Image (cartoon, rainbow, N blue to C red; front, side, top):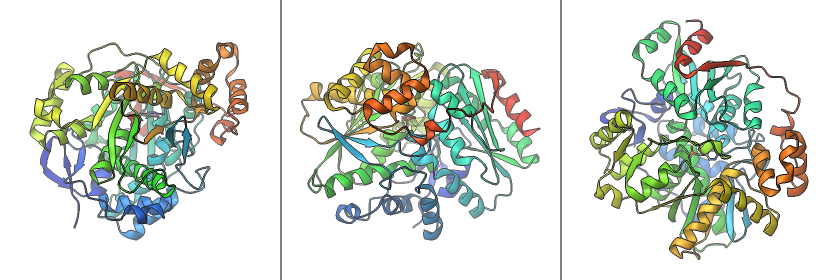
Length: 496
Ligand SMILES: *Cc1c(COP(=O)(O)O)cnc(C)c1O
């Protein structure tokens, strides 16, 4: 049976999976959600013998029901290939009693590769299935990692252009260098004077601008989104939770049906939402532990039931989590409201007019699967240093937020026995300066690439290809604009 998708703000308009992927965002500004979350239809015994690619097919076929087997397998095999530096794609590493799920073995060394390696293929396939003749313009706001992963996925993909906006002073030096050196005639990268939320709001405004849509249509273009609001990014992220669970089972770490906790360093709420969907598919997940940095709007939400973005935006050393509007939370809010689009629409309206909303007690009750907490900048640095000194394993700043929150969770709940997966979302090489400064303040004066080599020596890991290739790469993108001028910049690029 075909699984249909509808907007979190209006359940009357139904679209297929491929239509939802093409549109990115629903016309009413809501997010596409499946009518129901399908149950896993393969056993853990079967899954434990599967490769990453086979697991991806087993999971994704249940969500993308209008794709043929051949279409979906082709997308999967093109995405999860030798671009990843390990055939496991998403390996698990045990350190200090927890299992780090390393999602940074793709071409841009952050977990965004897990979904953005496949999204271009899903999108092109969706366009073909729906007889789209327009050229697709991917419009994306990034807090640092999505941008590079999307650029890398879409560079020179025929029938597409990609425009990425990032906060000029809100990403790490390596992140910026990775983006502005991007090759590909169809790629555009723009720094904005503003923060990530402004970049994201600017992109969202363009998506829901009907006049702009018409102008694009006339010129033979249509927008689509590579942001984590696209269902084509969410679904591939469910895969690695299923894969990791099956691997723990295969390796005898857990018994059949034994629950595991997952700790996810969270920003836009896409990654942890995928874990929640995996749990709803029947994967035995215990607690979903939502880890925030000092921008702890989600921690406050989970503890009080009130979401309030009216607060200072803090630039931290985990910039990919510097977010005050976690877009994907809307999908959770919709679900805990009992799939009530009207209630959700009312809350989201309140968010856009007053910057806050409060959920009902009944909805709060449905959030029991989650635990939220956060770490300060000092705590995050101390976690990196302590783990390195105890085990020799070096984690990045985002992963360290998760590891720190896991420590707080254990102290708070005394749940110290449940096996726990800590989602490792970036290679430490992507945030070399912050990581090395956490280990020893003497590194403060070193050059970026000296730090890279030193990190390789200390951690006893080779410098990833993604870093080597930007050492001497020329800067190809120099546009910088005000947040208000994003639309103008897009029009200029498209000559409309
Ligand atoms: C994007 C990102 C996150 C946050 O993930 P969300 O899905 O936005 O919650 C965490 N860590 C890193 C390294 C990221 O790139």
